[in-house]
Length: 123
Image (cartoon, rainbow, N blue to C red; front, side, top):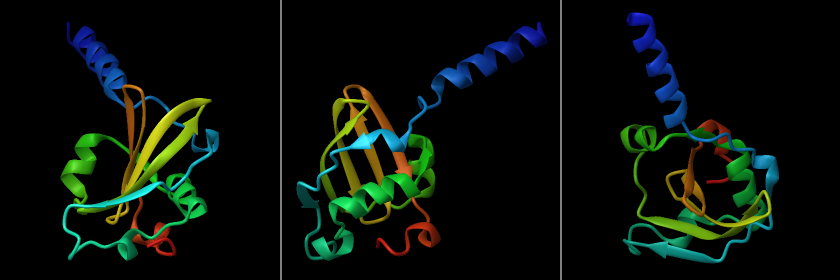
């Protein structure tokens, strides 16, 4: 019975994890907009990335799950966002000033975070 429970646990954990994501398949990323919930505290200069830099963010950042994002990373009240193609699908992305972001294609969302050493040149 313990072996069965162990195997079920492994299977459920595998299903709950994010589907594999290959950043090399991102194309046509474009910075379209800036949004801020607190414009006096979080301004465009806090997340002023070009199209090339935004793509570099996703290639340098690590893929994380939503629980890790919530538990270990600060929420920045401003972000840049725009369209991107992933595996020929039209998707949307967002990068927050706190060096976190996500890409959403239909119902699938992937979360990313980049530590200060890895993404220091971008922020």
